[in-house]
Length: 280
Image (cartoon, rainbow, N blue to C red):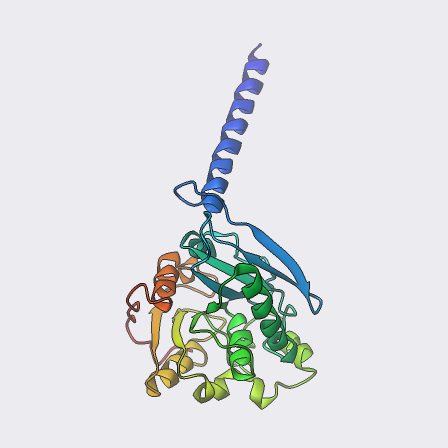
């Protein structure tokens, strides 16, 4: 009898845990107020998986964002999580692509951006306003800007990896970069060398940590902030803490605030303390 009671108690606990997890999942996919989850439209362009996720609720998207994944990411990376999910709950549609996987901003990935933009705008019924990138996605997105892809109004870069010859601390990056370019990175595909050529009418925001041990602040986000500021462009930055994978990089409040600003529905999020010049 005691064994049966213990088994029943264990079952009740497991059912309760499942119920809690289900409730959390509903909260992520439908939003805090329980509104209807947005639909997902999937496709394939030039051999690459693509998707566009519509905002929660029934209203037409107020904007379209494209997310550029990092090394090891894919078409689904972070789209269904709380960070980019905050954009969906704020009325945005979010599109993404495989971008030729570990492409590091090569020619093929730039073509992917152009194809995705046209396809996603047709499916969402609204023009692209915002690009959001993470790590390697910084190189993919900035190279796309520099090499003919349709340019958005706003760019939000989280720990952007843009100095392609200084990625030795990122596991596997040297091999992936060499494979992506068939050898050394061409000068015109190393974004850090062409910050002066980035569009002047884009609003930029950078999120990075001085403690990032993989993508050094000075050679990447710091260089971008310094040069765009020197050009007098609309550039702000949000300094977070911790290593490359620290969750503080993925701040949904900051992302939504910048999205609102991009659409003219709010003020520009302010910059934090200037980056440390001694960061590596």
